[in-house]
Amino acid sequence: MRYSSKARTLAVLVLLAAVVTAAAPSFIRVRSGDTLSELAQRHGTSVSVLRQLNALPGNGVIYAGSRLRVPGSAARTSRVVERGYTVRSGDNLSVIATRYGVSVRTIQVRNKLPRNGRIVVGRRLAIPVAVGSAPAASQSSVNAGVRIPGEVRSSAAASRAQLRRMSVPSKATVRRMVAATARRHGVNVSLAVAVAYHESGFQQRVVSSVNAIGVMQVLPSTAKVLARQHGRQLNILGTQDNITAGVLLLRQLQRSTGSTRMTLAGYYQGLGSISRKGLLPQTHSYIRSIEILRKRFSQG
Image (cartoon, rainbow, N blue to C red; front, side, top):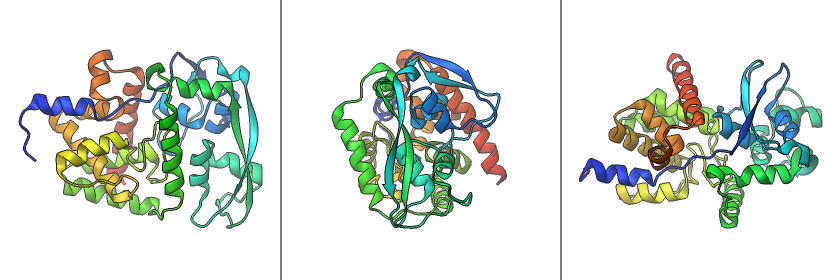
């Protein structure tokens, strides 16, 4: 693709990505045996918010002794309730856990499921979920303190519902698709694969609170800009188009910034936000996490 000017490309890229953060975080120390789900319940927030605040990988792995950001002082006003869910064809524990913002282990323990995660279609599961004023406050503070509009929440819910009805590839297949797409578009494979893993754990059914969709967590607005630029349709509910959109964005950021570090910063925080605020602390964490994952995937 030809670019009329670097300035024009930068102006377009400013519109392409937005950061999802929570305001005024405090810090906790992870103890042996802690899970993201339990910490989310303890501090009145959700697993997705903890992942976003701490730039955690898609599988939500945390380690004893590490320090995590948690939203403010919301824990004292939240409570845990149980939601019922009937297993449907195509479900797995990871998909269900992502849908409700809890850990796979929490669902396993609560429902006395085998450690291999096997579930049977038709089985009724109990899902412990943190609710109350605290989670709402956490969600209202995303995008640097701006409340998520109701239409955005509704769009995210609609995306999740549509993806539940769609067939999606396995994680192993998704990883191969990301690598192949990166090669096709001249993007470093380990970079694209690490971003995909960090964003979603190679899962197409992941949808964030701001309606970032799928494997590469692409916003619909970003997909529209990319589609116009590249003269093609991009249906980001479809796995291949979702991956293509994410890879094209990585390629544009790389060409524009000339730096892998700033490419990652732009993907996570957005160039507009970076120009106004500089790199946020969680952006630095995101970059470090991707660098670690790149080494892991380049060796695998």
